[in-house]
Length: 497
Image (cartoon, rainbow, N blue to C red; front, top):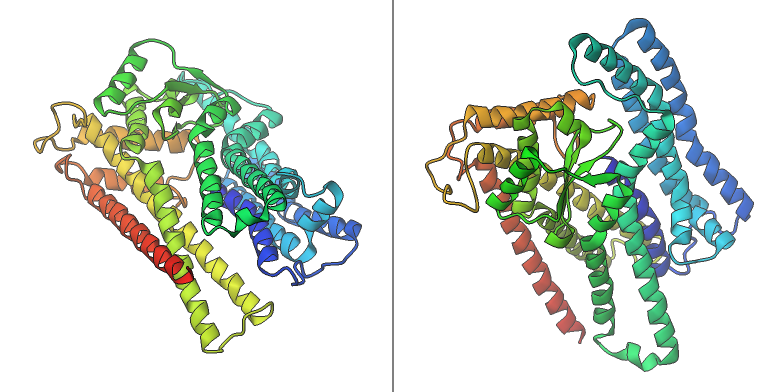
C-alpha cells in the first residue's frame, strides 16, 4: 500500500498544475496571495502534525512490549505508522491545494525542471521516513528476540542493524522504487514542454498543425516508456545487489528460466541487512530484466522453497504481468475518464451545473477523484490476481509443467509437494518479515488466503487452473476496453476536424 500512497503524493502535485492550467483565473490555492513565510510555516506545521500526534505513543508501546511481551502492541504500532503515512497524504493535499505549498516553493526556488516538485514532496516523504525511524526500537526488540531463539535452536542468526541502516534500507527499497522512476518521467515531461514552448515562440506556425499536440503527446509518452524500460538498470544500483555466485543453486535457477522461455540479464543477490526476505522481478525487456533474491531468503529457506520463490518471479515474467498491469490500469483510467466526461457533459447540457470555477470546478474535482479511484481499484484488483497466478505458476513448475519443453500437456497435475513448497515459502516470508499472515495487503492479499488457494490446486490439471482462466478474462476485458477507447478517440477527433 505504501507504493500506492507514494504515487498519490506525486499525483497531488501534478493535479495541482493541471487544475491551474484548466482554470488560470481561479483562486487556486484557496489562500492565494498570503505571505510566503506564512504559507511555508503553516505547511510545515501541518506536515509535522501526523508525526507529532501518532509517533509519540509508539515509544510507550515499545516499553509496554518490554513489560508484557504482547504481540498485539506490535500490530498497534504498525497501525499507528500506517496512520502517520496516510496523515502525511492528507496534509499534503491540504498544503498543496489550500495553503499553496507548491506555489511558495516555486516563489523561493523558481519553476525549475523537477527541482520544485521534489522540494514540495520532501516534507511528506520525511514524515514517512520518520515513521520508520520511530518503529526501529520495536523492530530491534523483535530482532533481538529472534537472535535469542536462533542461539537456542542453532539456526541462522539474523543481523542486528543500526537505526540509520534500518531507515536507509526502507528508503532504498520501498521509497526509491516509486520516487526515482516517477521523478525521471516528470523531468522528461517538463523538459519537453519547455522545448515545445521555445519552438512555439520561434515559429508559432508549427503549433497550428493538427498533428502538433498528437506529436508532442507521442514524444512524452515514448520517453516515459524508455525511462520505464531502462529503470531496472538504475534500480539495481540504487539497491545493493551482486550477481548470484556459481554453483548448483544458480544452475537450477538458470535452467528454470530456460525451461519457461524467460530471458533475464542476471540473477542477483539483493543485500538488505536482513531487512527483507523476499524475491522480486524488475524489468520488462530482457536486456534490463533482473530477478532478485535477498541474501536472507537464500540463507534461511530450503532449496525447494527458494526454487518456489524463484518460480513465482519467473511466472510474473512468463505471463507478462507487468505489461498487462499497466494496460489494465490505462484501460480503467481511460474508461472512467470517458464516463466522467459524458456525465459532466450531460449535467452541463441539462444545466444542472454550470461550467466555470464554481460549481463546474467542484464537479471537475469529483470527476478527477472518480478517475483516480478507478486507477487504484484496477491496480489492486489486477495485482492480487497476478500474484495468485504467480503462486499457481510456482506450483505448476514444481509439479513438472514447462512452457519451453516437451512436458506441456494435460497429463500433469499439481502435486501436494509442489503446492506445499510454495505455501511454506510464503509462510517463511511472513514469519521472517514479521508479518501477520492474516493481514490483507492491497497488492498481494493475505498470506493465509494465498496458502488456502494453493491447497485448492492440489490434484487439478496443471495446464488448466481456474486462476489462469480468470487472468485470461482480465486481459481480454483490458484489450476490449482499450480498443473501445481508441475508437472513441478517433471518432471524437474526426468530429473536431
